[in-house]
Length: 72
Image (cartoon, rainbow, N blue to C red; front, side, top):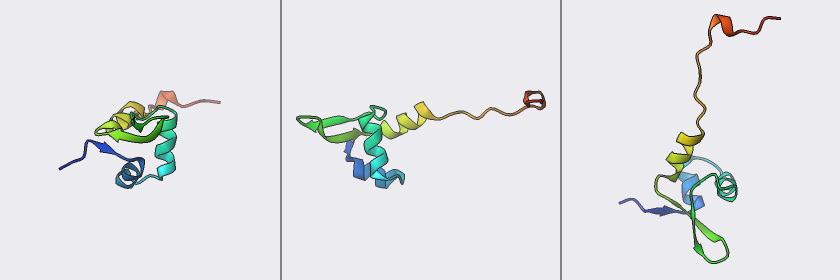
């Protein structure tokens, strides 16, 4: 059974990033989250929020062509 909410530490362990990076994304409102305590404390990340973040901020690579090179 999967849990509907994860702590920043649990998400960090699952995706292999430092917890400080996850907390930064929460603080900058780049990662969906909810607060379970008053005063903007104890953030929880809902299921699928990380996947949504990755899809939203992934930069798609474009194939390079011979004409696109800078000539100088």
